[in-house]
Image (tube, rainbow, N blue to C red):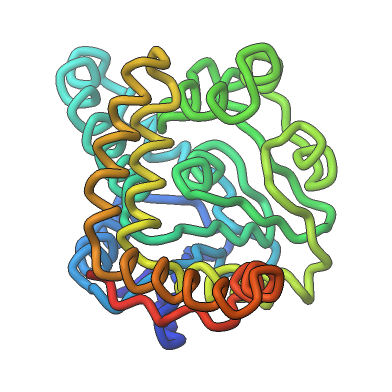
Length: 280
């Protein structure tokens, strides 16, 4: 691959995007990402993925405005072709969101427009502290955050704050983005990847069918009317309750409780004595 490199660490992979000097996201990079997604979906041993930038000071600066301008050059052709291009891009981000594995964006530099929208499709956004910018400035260019930003950001931080970000085209320092709820944590630059790897390794130990079920229940149900969301939760709970991992883990917990209930609770919350997940 030209734009993505992959490092494997047991059940965790790190995907790094590189397109120097500005690390703009471009169509070939999106095509390679789609290929990585397909491989990850088929890999039962892969439990968590970290996305990060492979260029100094940049996660993904934003989607290439040059590409967008070329698509907009002929209005009739743009109206004919662009809707399907955008729909395909949305489908790719939906596959990231519903990946039955943990997806962590380790933001290590400029992360605006399409770069931030990619991070919004992930489960978590961890950001290195530093003099760079995070946000959705598309309104400044006369367009909108069309890589799902208008839908994912309001669901993350609320409608009012999201409109402030998008209508003003604001960009924020990592600390400001954290206060807005746009990222989960801000970390010292030299600890970003080790912290992300710690989260990934911990979550990789969780029963994968439980992880997948929780993600589907949240992403597919949380924005529906309560009764419909609870229907999705019941369906997911029914399926995950019948798994071998659930039976094995609950039986191990009950055995530990019979010996010392308080110690069992403390140990299991710390991951001590929890049977290894088999994914079935």
